[in-house]
Length: 162
Length: 251
Image (cartoon, rainbow over all chains, first blue to last red; front, top):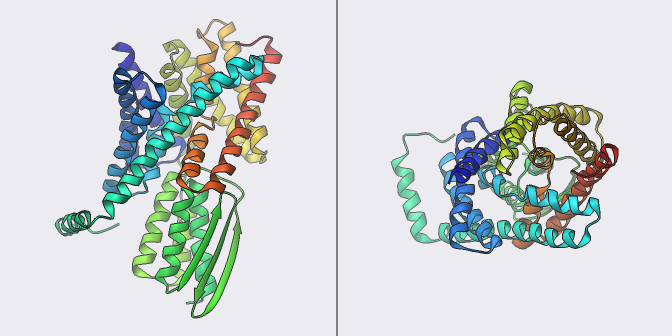
């Protein structure tokens, strides 16, 4: 439990730092940091339910994808701006490091198995966000969505567009 | 409005979006929307990570322009502003002068100050070291190395060294420093310190994005980005190898 909390907290701080490295807008920094914490929390939660690592990464990436799609609309910004930073705790940095380390010390069997783990995680993350963005396209092109967003716009008319 | 100038402005917006971290599909979409807003009957855009080609038909004449893209620098704030500008252009169709004024305004915007960036590097590498299982001590050492790494990166940027070698150099510096710190008894596990710092260099995001492009249908860009990520990883591994060689023995 303690480990999980430390993980979520450091994931949040790490994304906070990265949001500056990637030059996020000042107003987005808070949202992406929370997204970073969420991504790791989602991973840990799905790890309780599923054995396979790629599955957990897929679910976590989809959760961050949904978060990014929602906040991109609230903050009126491209989805990438939220997703690219919030997903960072999931990025297989450690796995990539160990892959590279095995190559350097010449343990080729370990290199291959670690390499395929790394690639598997990266594919799972990519599939997670793609699934969400495809679903979002389907939903937002529906008539019901148009009617609802038209109504929302009428309600918020007093706030002028940027 | 002059169509050649309009097309050139549209490509500039697309180019800068791509440089600052937009997906290929967004870039193509923005260029098509801008040209169509000004009455192009047909727009064809082909974008890969290193070039943009656009042909647009205005009043029965076809205009074609190409732009070569050489350097990238993730700047999500700039991407956000360009995206807003392109939406504004599509809605209001301002003249060329207005568009160009706003583009140069966006390109000339202020970056985060160096002390703030130092703090960000400090925080990122420290937090990720602890995140990947390092102790609090490791985190502090790693944070210091992370701040040093930014100075290293600023120096490299000024010299304009190619990407593989700049990563090689950075990863060499990280590994040597981490090994020295651990040998001095400051910090427990060198590999956790290295991982925390390598997160700042790692092509993990590039790798994930490349697969996203690839599976999403932008095969050319996906393949190019994938290869680029592999090359960067080779650079990092090279620096690591050199450092291990110099310090004697893998950590």
